[in-house]
Length: 255
Ligand code: ADP
Ligand code: MG
Image 1 (cartoon, rainbow, N blue to C red):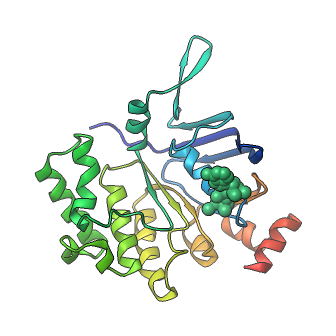
Image 2: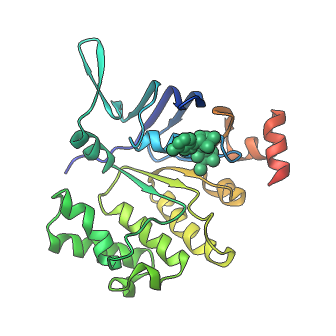
Image 3: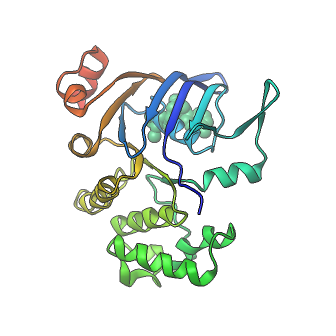
């Protein structure tokens, strides 16, 4: 089996949507097995950063590397070329992404949701996929929900299915984009528990979150973004208890 990828380097990344200069030179590193929580106000570019790491977008300037390998681009001679869609898709299967809105396929059962990508990418046979899916559902506490449709599940259950689905391809990196922001408060804990367990198992992760208590507990490092740049980063206690910039002080007193 291929070694799972695990290290992320974001170097001088800039990105605009049309005339909206959203990322203005982001430098960012996540070491193997490290959990980095990204905090920051709405519109600061957090989701855009995750999309770049997941090769859903390519930077206008700068580079994203996973385990030293350029994401979405290849070097030929002294020039960079966009990878083929096929190559990008292959890279993308090595990072698991979980979105705020779950994004499960509503017309498929939970098991079908989990088995789709690995079977499509010919990584697993149907039988192997079902076996792995069953194990993962057990791990997220949903052993009995394989034949249910997502619409019959609570938000917390749907998000745990989405996490299990992201784990099906055995990614080296997990990316979470505000995984609990769409949940009723009483369902947040069950999802954070699953993420906490992944962290304890040594999964390399970026978690964009507004749950500062959770970030303090699981993050090796917290990165505060504002206005398309990393304003401060460091150990949770340093960032949350001793903010240096006025921007972070203002953000922390508002949440
Ligand atoms: P955050 O996740 O921190 O809230 P985003 O990365 O989603 O920030 O967005 C940063 C900025 O980019 C915002 O101004 C947002 O309106 C804009 N933006 C995000 N996605 C798109 C898109 N697909 N097309 C155009 N503008 C976008
Ligand atoms: Mg966002």
